[in-house]
Image (cartoon, rainbow, N blue to C red; front, side, top):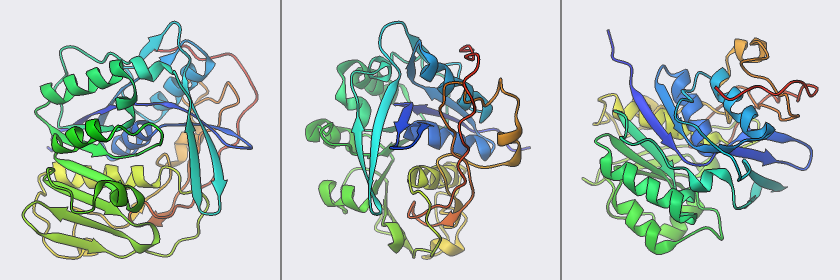
Length: 314
């Protein structure tokens, strides 16, 4: 029987505020949800406020089978919020601060794990940054950095050090233009190129390229996170040597992935209110879609339910 893999997924969990809705979000939460859907034990390391948004995030994560036992609750700082505006096919992000996840302390000692996954945003605050470095220093697993650059929160010196410390760096085309597509340090570097697909490079010089697949677009937020989860699952599960030069023919880099912020299965929508509620007017986006490289996604939004009793943090 195959051993259940464990991922520690560290960083920001927050509410995405669109012009017309509020959505439970955060790249670590998206990645954890997709790993959990693939049978992993995905343990979320984050910090939320002692407020309705924080309770909503924890309830949503629980409903998506994410392990929330390492989630912290801050008695003072609020749950994080990112304001998102849309400009054609691009998103503009305003990550508000300070937020509870800026001061996440993390577990000590660090629990056993197969993968440690994080982005660069925790570098914006000294407390979260110190926690991140401690986790990396204690990790014996596969370390993964999703660049996830969000100006003005980009510290190039700290980012350079972080890139050099990981096994896998994943970035989009814009981030590759900033960091350099042929960056040295990680064993693996993956660049997603939107409609043009994705490329995976190994330090040995090997390269695997997959073209984009045309798909109706509803919302691309979270698509790259879904792609990253599939990539990590393939690389960690012992498939460290892709068999071909085409990702479409190789199980390591599953080129056609289910893409939305959160994975879809029918009972996510039908679960009891205690498992996946929207008690604070915050929606949970689920849907299905096929695409490559986090380029595009189709989705079906779950409209917020009417306000009700807040769900306690487990």
